[in-house]
Image (cartoon, rainbow, N blue to C red):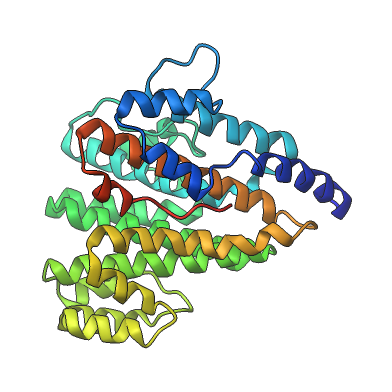
Length: 323
């Protein structure tokens, strides 16, 4: 697309940003007394649509559908957004490997509308034709399959695929000409690595296991991160405080929920400069990520209301908004 094409597309996105939920609107949703009241609030805000059931998940699915319909209308080159689908694609790979290796089929476990499709991934794994898969996932598919088949270790299988997913996102960032995608990939992978290291530290994983689970990125030394995570919580916290991700250590001292929230907020913070960039795909990517974050946060609130979670507990899980 030309610069003028982006000017038009960004102008359209700017108008749609006006309907994004702010932190204040999320507070209004959170203040609703129960799940049904939250659903009513969303419907009043125009979420869902004609024929959408009065159900939280159905409303959220419709909103995600609207987002990608808008993006497809504004840009003919959807390959720019492919990296945002990697989480779902690699989830489908894990599901396919487990289904084939264990012979157990789980209903409704696959994400739809991915590229490659769930059906294509399952067929490749079933036929052991891993080269039929995209290059960014073929070797991980082969390794995960062989690992689960011979060791029956589902956790190790997951680790192989999860690392490959992070590497695919990071590679997409490195190859992209759009700074926004590089910034996203760096923030996403670094935050994920900190999550992994923290989880491994709490479960007593070895340094070699942790190093194998981490995906390289510029912001962190995965060798040092693995070493300190294996050494203990104090060592891990001290290392994080010496990096650009010192806030992770402070969040960990509060709670796991606060830490998870902090990690997601880093990605949104990395996107905010795109509000002032009218001449590239950046604002479109940022809008797509903002909508995903918005939908995720609404899901957190709905889930908390449905299960009767205290408002304070829900609030500490609420993510920062883009607007």
